[in-house]
Image 1 (cartoon, each protein chain N blue to C red):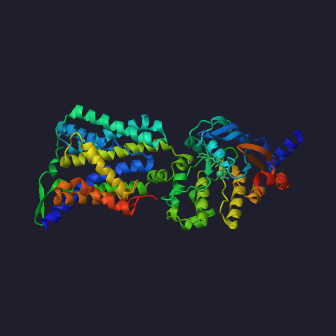
Image 2: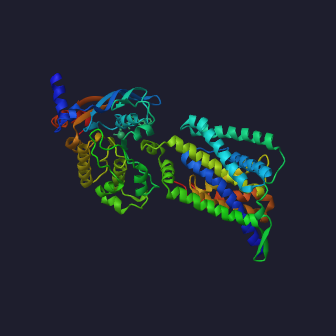
Image 3: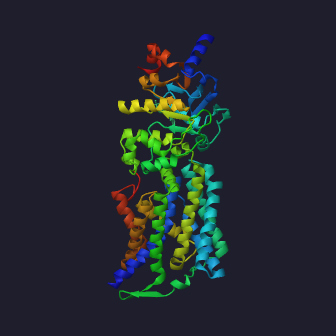
Length: 262
Length: 284
Ligand SMILES: Nc1ncnc2c1ncn2[C@@H]1O[C@H](COP(=O)(O)OP(=O)(O)OP(=O)(O)O)[C@@H](O)[C@H]1O
Ligand SMILES: [Mg+2]
């Protein structure tokens, strides 16, 4: 057990030996969340080390989005703690948390139909503190975000209601990017995207990690998870039932079948 | 000819009062999802406060400014300390505003009494202007200009500024705006106060025309609800068009069928809602 745990921590470390020494970016402990009477999260524990990509996988309806919502304070947990860095943020209002450099790419994109592409970026933009916590010094400005997504540049003055599904997802990502997060939470970002855009997204996430961003990625696309994750957290019925490295998950068809249905 | 012209101008000037009043109501509904039953109270209180200030100072603009500021503060306090406590419970919030409607009505009756009163017009806008063979009240003409100006300013504020974009984003998806780090509780209070201020401005502008009396709050609120429903909840542009429709329908209706006056103001609502249930500019 001890041996496998230390093996797992090496996987988190990845190529950069310094990372293991940094404190966690996000720590979730014993989280219980209800929607009215329905008990959805049954004590979720999860650690996300700084500058790493942690994936949460699991079948439909196991509570992945609820976990994201609870971390962000959108569905406040009834019990348990969420720490970001050393700070206990469990009872913070959502907007305060987002000001501490946490950004969300939500499931279903949730762009604002009546705003133009540019307006999304304008209201989302935050300078954030760059150059601290090992975060790369060059901030994501609106211009830099648009360089990554030239398609959005072309549609800058259009209302988001007129965008295609892929463009909406790019916008949702760009909107989070210009917030200059230290912790980026993405809920099924590849849902409904073409393979080319998925590749682009993968490159972007790797780049963000190398810039020092910690990423919590909820995802059902196994190939995407295997290509990116430093650590995979398997969720079932409102709990994290297993955590392992991407390699371990890739080598265990039994696990993917049981928990992911593939 | 002059029958048409006069009634059209009457309809337009009345429509502008309606628009200023309804713009606040539709903004508040669009963002906070509350049907503010006390919106007419803000109109009435605004008118009364302006009346008292004008009587004391003989200064129309000062009356208007004090009325707007006072009612905005009242709205901010009401939202912050009562409505905000019922977050996401739209029906209890709306019912609470109904309670405020009765309280404010009593308060106004207690302070300003039960006799109908007219807000004095600004001195420069007394008298009439002659054109096209008619002599038409200068104040009513000015109202048309002011209404258009308010509409343009509101449109510029909402479409052209960052705070306007935040408000529209909040109308689309309040939770997502919160997740982006925007202090939405504060935006809610500000928009509610702003809407209250617009209602007060409506009361001051309409005061010299329609008069202030117990029950005026309810009467104008009725029409504002019609306007907001016809225009599409949350839409300023819709509220503008609907105000014109309702204002003109009300005036011509009253001219042609005096015994059916309120009915004719509601006809546009019946027709529009039959064809477009979400209103002219409503969100789907
Ligand atoms: N607002 C809500 N009110 C009541 N129940 C809800 C609500 N949102 C989700 N649920 C229920 O909570 C459970 C977990 O939902 P959640 O959206 O967190 O799952 P998920 O793992 O994200 O699923 P998916 O893969 O489909 O996105 C489900 O049974 C769902 O029906
Ligand atoms: Mg989900």
